Image 1 (tube, rainbow, N blue to C red):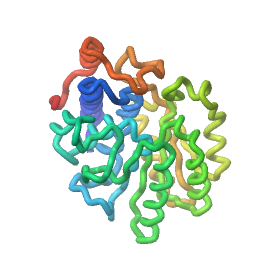
Image 2: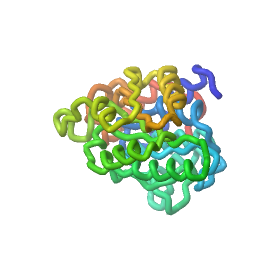
Image 3: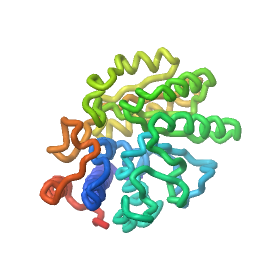
Image 4: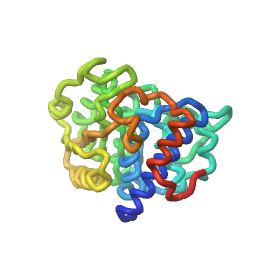
Length: 281
């Protein structure tokens, strides 16, 4: 367990990792990665019961599935910083023959990655399967997932949402990164989601909402509340209001950094806003 100061130091370092990884290859998705840095830091360093000595079956530990796999930079950084693989490997991001591809893959056995993701809309279905398996095996661990809000425009999600509640998959906590932006603009411009909370509740999910989705203490609190709510007959959803590009001022408030890399000057600016705390790779 980490204190808040230590967690904020990790967050600053993870932000540095994200912008450096994407800059090095002029390719990747910094916006959503930065927006979810606090969430994944809270999950891996404070909330989940997990083991960096990775075993694919995950028996007896909490599991996490990243559905919106394009935010792989933050996922890789948090996995490395929490001990799954050497931090130095982050320097291979998106390079030829690297294990750290733009979207997470499983065929090269990267520790901490249980599914290939990035084909949006599929992660919840996989997570439900893992959660159902745990229930069948009397394993009382929790399955966590993360989804983009724009990702919920994919129809498969709603079949999975219906299935989870209909089958009382109540060891599942699905978090939605609600930054209201996607690659082509705001979600209201591309395909409005309407009242997302009302939709999820209509599918008989227990829905929690956190307006301060980039506040580490608020995230820990909402995740703790969600954990208490498991095992009571309903899957749990968290609508987490985040800011795309959080922590880098010129990336915030716009969808334009969803999939764009900073140049040399912009990288230096981003790094100046996030002090090195654990050592760059």
